[in-house]
Length: 288
Image (cartoon, rainbow, N blue to C red; front, side):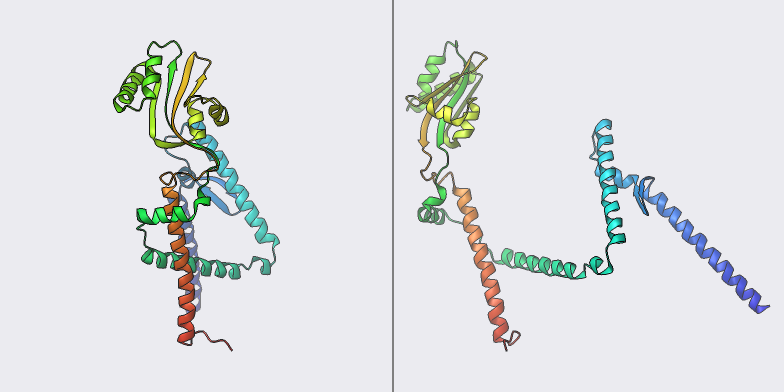
């Protein structure tokens, strides 16, 4: 009798465990959302798919994004399943690679922590000037740099001649008048006399390529007509030719980056050397 009761209890327990497991699976399915695709034993749920699609996307774009994501998801898992099936146990053992990646990542993170704690990010104007003077070849121009005032204006505009005259003046008041007239009479007027522009940037504003722009300069003016009956006119205030070193103010941020990069490299090298010397001194590192 006791044996029968024991067997019955085991059976009830097994049924209970199975029902609990099924209920847990069902609850999990319900929590994760409706299944929208299936590959082998892998399931893609609607909430996973929706998290990939940005808010505010049109229904048409949303459908396209969903289709691409589902296909990519399926391709990835099909390839993974095939690898699991076809590769040998030795080929599937990636523990060595994972450990190597872990070590590399930990070393990188510590180096970054070490550098961030010690890196001096303050760079003075004198340091920039000294670096610039010591490395002129680093800053030689591939294309000219220009400072200019330029505008787009109708070819028959009555104030065209006056604006051209004033925009090329050395008198600050006349330059201001050119700016005022240009903002009223021109489709576009820009005073970039205090800013170095790459020749390509100015050429794009002029609707041409930079070599054509440069060849069209006469008496410091470049002039290009467009198909709409407008003139694109630039007065070249200053120019540095290609092959010459760029002005220091144009490359200041680049010099800052170069100085910081050099400081980081010194810290990295110093860290490695200090660790080695400390280990030798404390006999943590011994060469036999």
